[in-house]
Length: 86
Image (cartoon, rainbow, N blue to C red; front, side, top):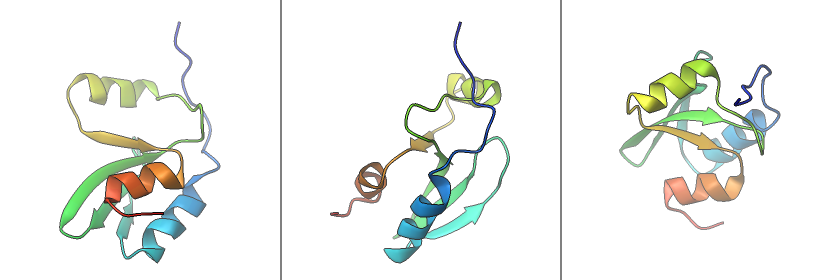
């Protein structure tokens, strides 16, 4: 049986700070997903996950329906998504 997240992850603040430091704009939603990230004309639905964090039941349902949610745990993953170097 899958485990589901039930707490706020510990990585969100530092990842949002990094995103803003490289020029991205972030709109927090604080709902089923954490927010929307905008960078150089592109937009992503984002959920910040602690390493090893699991999807919530609602997130699992959205992913199963094809929603393009990006689950980001590290600065390296964020840089890759944004297409920038470290």
